[in-house]
Length: 181
Length: 90
Image (cartoon, rainbow over all chains, first blue to last red; front, side, top):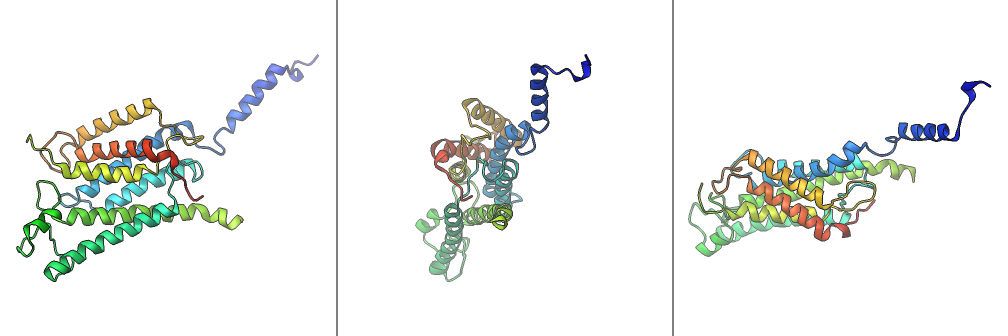
């Protein structure tokens, strides 16, 4: 009897396991990516929010912070795939946040236009003393600086950028699927 | 260190984190599941990061980055409260 051709059911099972393990990452990500990407995405999103909120006194701002948040979302989409990504960006959410950011920016500009005649006048800081104190207190960002409406403008821009860049990557990831249909 | 806590970055960091966190599914199939241990690990990592970031962005209230840590808490709370109802258009 030739020993090379001898195969027990246990050997077949081991061979099948090895073959399945050899292809374990053919469709899904590795366990390292599956475990690590989610917390890293959360940390990247928080770093982006911190960059947005420090934009009036540090390097950064709305666009940079929004791009960092979008990078966290894109990392999750690229690693898990759009279908299995834990971060779900729906069309309604994207359009709502984009519209809210633009609306907030225009409203802040129109407040300055209505009260002082200058579009985007910083009614929260009011360095020329043109608006009443109550209006200034409403639009004053609650921190130790006298930034006024600038952090709010950063937030508006950040919301627009985070959904805009995320939408671009989500659209790109769907083009092949769209072409197959 | 001043005793006055600056509420601006804490409040708005939490709010923006809550908005983004509402889209984060915590028990997506075949990907990471947000268990209790994972939440504790993320919070410990975020505390270490915020300690090393220091008083960013240059406020003098606490020796940690308050905007960062409030954003992490906002993301986690938003994910736990509203995350499972998030649906994508794919």
